[in-house]
Amino acid sequence: MTGVGPLARLAFRRDRIGLAVCVYVIVIMVAVNGYEFRKLYPTAAGRQSLAATSESNPALRFLYGTLDGSSLGSLTVWRIGVWAALFAALAAVFLVIRHTRADEEAGRLELVSSAAVGGSAALVASLAVAAATMLAVVALLCLVLPLVGLPAGGSALLALSIGASGLAFAGIAAATAQLTTGARAARGIALAVLGAAFVLRGSGDAGGPSGGTAWLTWTSPLGWVSLARPFGASRWWVLCLPAAVCVLGVAAAFVLAARRDLGVGLIPDRPGRPSASAALRGPDGLAWRLQRGTLLGWLAGYAAMFAICGAAAQGIGQLVGTSSALRGEFTRLGGQSSIVDAYLAALMLLAGVVAGAYAVSGVLRLRSEETGGLAEPVLATAVGRVRWALSHILVAVAGSALLLAVAGAATGLGYGLRAGSTGTEVSRMLGAGLSQLPAVLVVAGLAVLAFGLVPRWSVPGMWTVVGLLTVLQLFGPVLRFSHWLMDVSPFAHVPRLPGGTVQARPLTWLCAIAVVFSLGGLDALRHRDIG
Image (tube, rainbow, N blue to C red; front, side):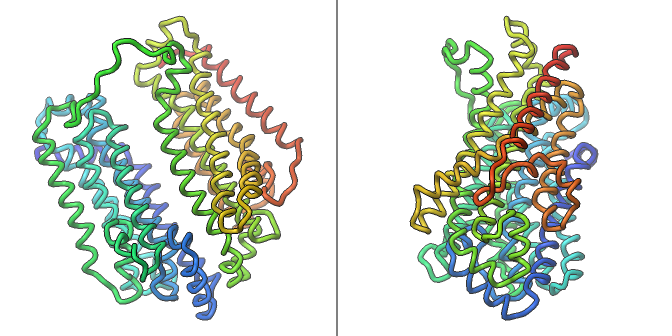
């Protein structure tokens, strides 16, 4: 254990901004939902009507879980409890693997281990940082939630449930970090466990409390937040379940770490083919090979999530009808007077913003290839800089278009199956999804420009841009930001479909701006040093 303290301080130093953002997002997400429910449903009758409507919709139960009463606290747990636990789990997974397997893969742990540092110090330090992060989330939630009018006891149990879910997946991530040689594969395994936990929880809740699948909720760490019943008949003993998962995961991590050498995993790497396939003879095939796994994961998540959200549209009128204020917020966000069309348009806007995040990650793969020393061997062959960059840009753009098409088709399929008009809704929503593509292209072009002009700041700068765009588009209409501020976002200039009108001029301007940004970035790449 020698060196745990210095390594933990180093981890805090490296992630001080990211950790602060994670804690802030989780806390403000829960607090804002509690405040909004008090504002949108001030009467007990309105809350009871909302509870009855949500409980009659299996798609909503899959997304949010089952309700335990109709109090403000119960509605807050129903609406955001699962998602807050999901965000906490994501933060824990990325944090633990970053400071264990990722540092080991990069050779940093081998360098650190040459000093007076114990063999288990890095693992213990990463878990200590994850635990401190979850403790900060719990403490702030216990402080903030009573300020928005929720009972202190229930707020404490909700906060502890969210933090315990994060610790459970910190233990799982610690174990998966010992299995593979690469950090990407270790994260993939941990995220696959997290995805399975969400599906198990959703399947159990979708059947209802008296359904035959209700027991599945008990098998998922994400389901334990609602099963603790923070604002009902509190079950404090449920906190023992995520604690047990965390202890078992950490114990497994120590056992597995003792059985392997530094720099390798327990799952051996598969030997490659003796000769490359024809698809890898050019930079396009290599870029596709490097990014295909990520894209396939995004496609699977898009298909499942938007199909479920589309199915929930069938009952959105009854749900929103319980609150005139909520109806007003939906119509402002979706830009339509029809509540169903406004809901579907808001879904497509969300699909566009998230696809923009994927486009940024795909383009910025160029930066990771450059800093990792993997670009130079490619550029040492008969491949120019622009050709190399275009290969990754092409995958990012094509992948974004495919994500939008899948989002639209899945939403139309989910809604059409319940409304009885599958063919019409699929084609209608497919066009609505693809209408977001010009705005996504602007975001991708800006990422190319940042990579070419300011490569050192391209990664933090572009993710800051993605965060600001998310805030503008998802909260700007509700908070009634000024028009000039909203017009900064390219997503403010795409049509609100379905139900809106399509104008060619703004779409043409968006495509032109994307081309100018991309050409500027590629030209800057030609005139700067690599690395």
